[in-house]
Length: 271
Image (cartoon, rainbow, N blue to C red; front, side, top):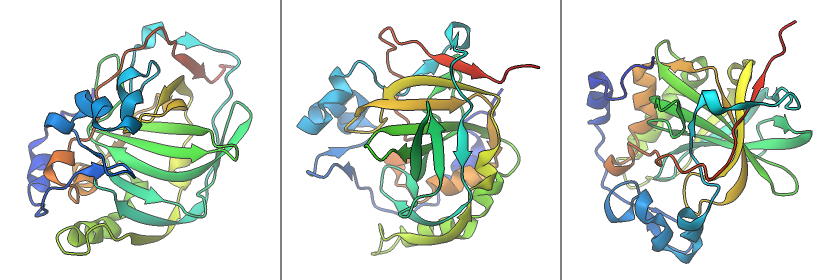
């Protein structure tokens, strides 16, 4: 069972942010957010580019009902070839992004190789497992040479510090400090980041076809959600949201209808 998302210490740490509210935008200037008239229920009407958010039939995130997930013996292990890479932290208003301009390694899905482009965090989680929501969800976004996208998602509960995030502690603090001055939005070099802690083998994952979880909600995104729930400390979770303005500290899109989709499950074969 995950620790409650509304942890008092977590909220106290968030309360310190001193920034003035802004809104996330698409390239044509349409603004979207998570509350009120620009919240998820209204995304489809905010811009012609966002129409799929309202009319798409394969949208993300979803609730994964494990009893209805279908075991597929043809699914392969997630071969993740991550080592070390130069990263850049960016506050893009809607969430914090760790960007790898030269790539951060690869994942192989259904025989196709995808290069890691960036990772970002949502708090609380966007996907749920049997209706249970977790404090944080990490999205690792990969793209293939032919333009297809696959996302590997990891869910986090509160607990021991996450060794991957421990590498970014000082850089996240710098991004928070920057957010309170006129240079907000300038990238913060993260330097060489080891991705080894994210290679932990998962014996089970869930696979389905969905969409981006922010506008324009583009579909045909292949999702792999690791069943093993990882841990991070309350302080680490707070550091991921402290640079964000008030209306983006809860930056999860509600779960979307399945519309007949089937979630497949991979399990390591037992000898």
